[in-house]
Image (cartoon, rainbow, N blue to C red; front, side, top):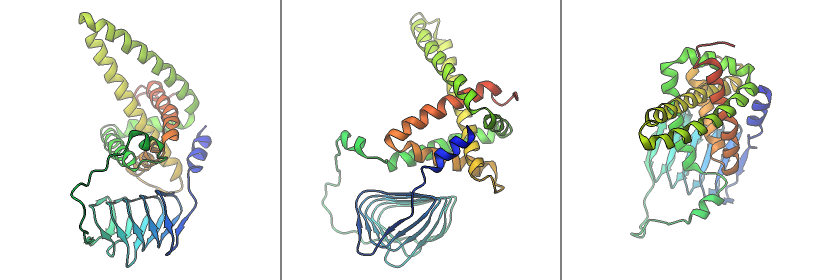
Length: 289
């Protein structure tokens, strides 16, 4: 089952991307685990995960580089924001119109603001909800998921690192068992929530309802952190890294996959039962099976 999980994640890697000097790329550009060369124009956002990025063109949206190396040459422009997470390289020559955000990155950064052209006073663009649904990849969702799950997972790791490591090692040998038990627990949790919600009308069920919701959230969060650790450790198996690196890599891949409209739902259906199941099996990392 572990091999299936790793192969599934590996199948999401994209081929290298090259945009020549006279070329204009419509829409967003997303690449994972390969090389990116941008000499022309990208009309949407650029998202790079674990790639080597050579950039001398123009990006009309945001530029996000996670866990890779970026080398910016003269003439590079970003009309939106530039986000650098766990990255290294040199972006001194990039002209950025929006904000520059650097998180855990060793990047030579000398922010150069691009000249702002005169624009209309009305800058708000209203997009119908259907347009958002039709987009295959959502950059905003990726960034929000990465920040949210990253902060929560690092908090769990800080509080209970040994238990997370233990649960991750158990999960490596019992993925299928964890999913089955987690799915049954999820159904039981829904039943209990509905039951206690009905009983809360007469105030009897309120404490039980709050306790049930708390346990579900705690179990899911602890289990997700263990899953992230396993994903990162499986990919970086040949390297010795700290648990923080493993968890952040797992969070990055999870957030990336969730940002795709259909794939995100499938990933949630797979990982949520696993997270709850392994938490139950190990009793929050207190028992080895």
